[in-house]
Length: 122
Image (cartoon, rainbow, N blue to C red; front, side, top):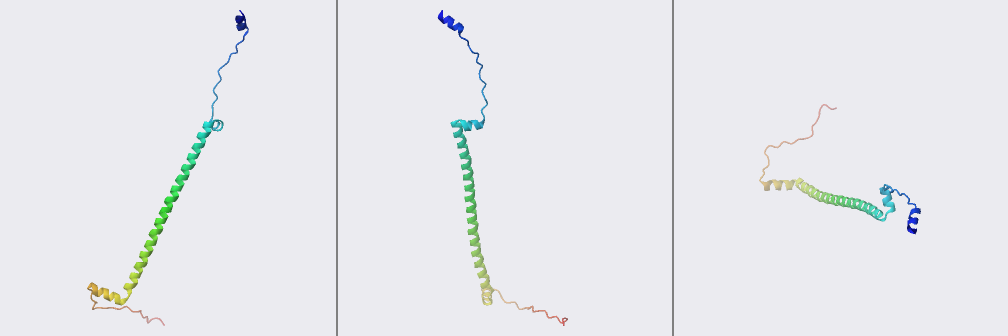
């Protein structure tokens, strides 16, 4: 009887189930450890991949620049050699020696151009 009386006097509260509140991404990142860890990891991956991409682009441009400078140096040396060869060939005796070695003969008809003398100028 005592238990029955106690049961009758006990009032039960009607408890409605709580609605689940929407959790935003910022709350997850700020309040939960795992969310913070995942957020920081994502930021770290983004920053490191950007750095690696920039570094590889910088190195590629450096290699390209070095290759162009090496090529330019080689072309300058080759140009200097060609200029020296041209200077050597401009000397008359070398030209005659080259012509005779190549089997060339001097022309019989030679015409020389001289300065034009104008008589109408006073």
